[in-house]
Structure formats: structure tokens, C-alpha cells
Length: 421
Ligand SMILES: Cc1ncc(COP(=O)(O)O)c(C=O)c1O
Image 1 (cartoon, rainbow, N blue to C red):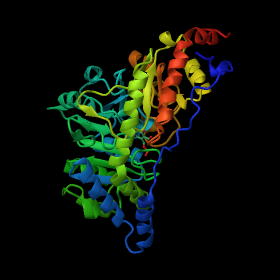
Image 2: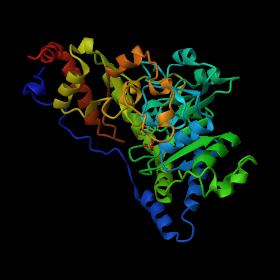
Image 3: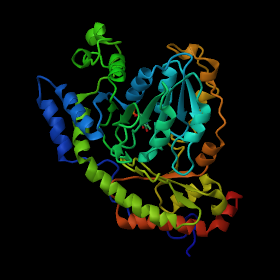
Image 4: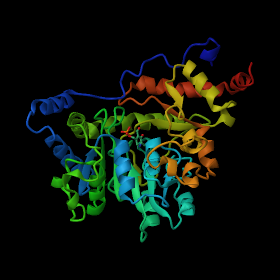
């Protein structure tokens, strides 16, 4: 076994990924150009995309938005989140799954995630339900579906809305059903790095006319009149409640082409994820993110897993540093969010008192959510992501896995590095 690269040995990864995160073809350009050339009704693109997305996810409605954050805000608002209500949300997610709860003046209640799948833990969620709970948001983290049977059982016979944050997971399935069609509302980001990208865009899906109208009312001024499903909001005419979360048709045109290409892109991602899973699964102390038996991954925003600091002989930051020196394109999951969000300053010591909107009026619990989340905090100290292109070279996959094997074989040296030698 050669020396670690950090000690001057040869790098384990010598080949490039030979691919990029986002795959853009002539089809995206063709659809975007079509909108540019349509001088009379560029917004017709939104209708086309919504029709395609409804068919893809299998819901009655799809409503496109300017981004995924707007989709989540609309969904959480539609679920009736307001002062005095609580929304349960996993701590391991992007902040946009959580912050809309505060924008509704409601209280986020963080729950644990399952340390193997990284998705909200249903048993822990059950313990956090109160008479104030109006919604549960689950994130299909990195394209890996949460345990939807368990969550459907939890909300059955209650008024609690089940919202799926499927931003990472277009095309993922639970028991043969597309994510985004299983809970009451599905939310998808179509941001630049996402598996269906419009650079900046989003979409929400639902089968429920009332929830659809509420989302429409919040953010779709200008489109409402043509789209209202129920009589309730018609008095608001095209204005709705006046916020404008409408999508830009140029981004949506790009996303429509990406959606058509998604099955092929997902297959490519699935193929290398499978290879990486089996190679890394052989390395002591490494555990790739697991998938529930009824789930099928889709979208696959990030390849994630855990490294056990006890087996590697050093804490996570040292393991990552040594892997990076070996040429592995790897980072701690804290690098971009997605970890223990309840530890963020926003939920701890940040002062809101002079802010506008609902912020100055947030309740004490909303400002400082009470958190006891040891499993998720431990997961944060073990988890990593790899760069996640669509179809990297087989050699890159093999060398990346070999680098983990090389590093763990040097566990004694890692302990020395951790101790400053
Ligand atoms: C899980 C999750 N939810 C929501 C969002 C927000 O989406 P957007 O950036 O399109 O507003 C993101 C963005 O990265 C995300 O990862």
C-alpha cells in the first residue's frame, strides 16, 4: 500500500470525472428558443410544462413557480401554517424546507432522521405530533424516498397535511408511485443543479382542489382567473393574495426539455450509484446511503454516505482532508447545508426583534425550537457527499472507491494526523 497523498504518496484518483453535473442538450435550447420566438404568448409555456408535469407525476394539478422555495412556501401556507401551529420537518434538509414555516409565523418542530436513509424518522415524528401540528414535511433527501407508508399512516384520519419536498427526487418512486403524488402536496426545486433544471424554477403538485387554490392564491397573481378550481377564491379574481411567485417561461421551457430527458438521465445516474454502492459497501467503515425496500431512487442530486470516525481513526474533517488530497471530489454534508439545520444560528442566537413581517412576532418556541436530536447530530459528524455528475467514467468510480479503501487502511496514520503528528 503506497503512502497517503497527504504525506507525499501518489494520488489514488488520477482520472477525471469526465462529465458534468448538469446535462444540457439541443432540446433545451430548442424549447427556450421557441419561447423567445413566441412574441404573443410566452406564458403558454407554463401551461405546457404543467400538463407534462401532471402526466409525469400522476397528479391532478401541477403549478409552476419561480423556485422551489416558493413552492414550499405556497404548500406550507396552503396547509394552514400560522401563529400557534406547528410544522414537523427533518433537520437534515435544505433550509428552504424549514424557513417558509417561519414566514407563515408558525413553529418548526425538528425531527430526527433515520441514520441509514437520511430521511425523516417516522417513529420520532409520531412523538412530536401535538394538537397544534398542521403539517409534516418530509424531504426525499438526495433523491432517496422517505418511508411514505409510515407517513401516510401517521396522517390518516387527521387534519395534518403531508408535504413531500421532492426537490432532489424527480422520478423517484415509492411502491411504484411517483414521489410528489403520495402526500397531499409535492414540491420540486428546478434550480440549476437539480435533476430537472430550469436554472431557477420550481413546481408544486397536488390532487386536492382546495390546496391547489390556496397555493394559487398566495403566489400566482396574473394566472388565477384562468386556474381557480373552487368558488372560494374567485372573488379575488386575477390578483389572488398578490404575491408573485410565477415562473419565468424561459426557465420552464428548459425544464420541460429536461423532464423529457429525465428517464434517460436517471438511468445513467442509477447505474453509477449502483456501482459505487457495491464498491464502497466493501470498504470497512463506509456505508452508502440506504434505500427502503419499497423505494426506488430518482433524481439523485447527490451521492452520499457515512464514514465511521472510529474505524477511520480520525474525525470527519481529517478523513475528508485526506480523501481530498487523494483526489476524491468529496465534502462534508455541512458544506452546503443539508445537515443538522437546527444548529444553524437562525434557530439559535440570531435576533429577529427589529425585523419586519412575521419575524418580530415569532413565538419563543419558533425562535428557539427545543431540539433533542442526537441521532441527526451524530449523522452530521459522519456523512459525506461525492461530486455527482450524470455519467462519470467507470475508472473514476473505481478509483474513488479505491481511495476510501486506501485511506481506511492508513487508519493509524490518520490517528497521528488527528493528534497533530
Ligand atoms: C431539499 C430542497 N428543498 C428546497 C430547495 C429550494 O429550492 P430553490 O433553490 O429552487 O428555491 C432546495 C434547493 O437546493 C433543496 O435542496
